[in-house]
Image (cartoon, rainbow, N blue to C red; front, side, top):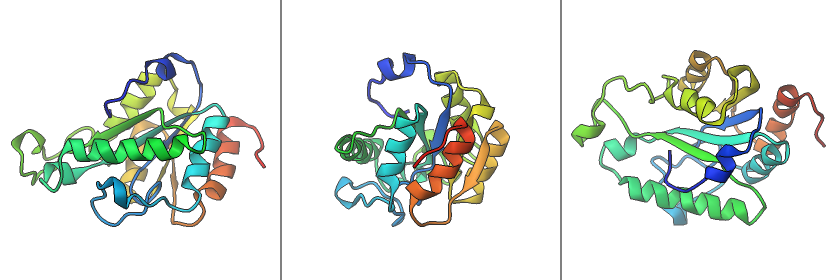
Length: 187
């Protein structure tokens, strides 16, 4: 989980969770995104995060970050990218409650990240299971939006509904899924 203090958010009891993949879902995937100045949001992404916040859902990100393990960038670079995401989200009254990341890869340059089948690396469900446990949300009260088969498999293994995102306005895409999760209607 990224290193900011979200103790107050984690102690607030919310019963629903929206799990977003990062690259290709929240930000445009240019390949190994880590430079804050190159952050480009997917259309409707900031509004989608705010809509999930306004619906009272816990909002988390679960992202494979093999670029760290492969030595393309450091954890500090990823943290800076996440800090910029959070800063920009705050300008529209939105927030991400936690970011879980898996820097592991079987061909990692750094030995500490060289793991063939780490339980956190999607399609494994480790990050999702930890998010559910950290926030006390039942799997049936959560869904994950992802853009890769590995996202959908991680959701399935965690007992969470996976929703495959193929592009377009993320906020518009989120509305029916959020309504299905919460039983509420959204404009």
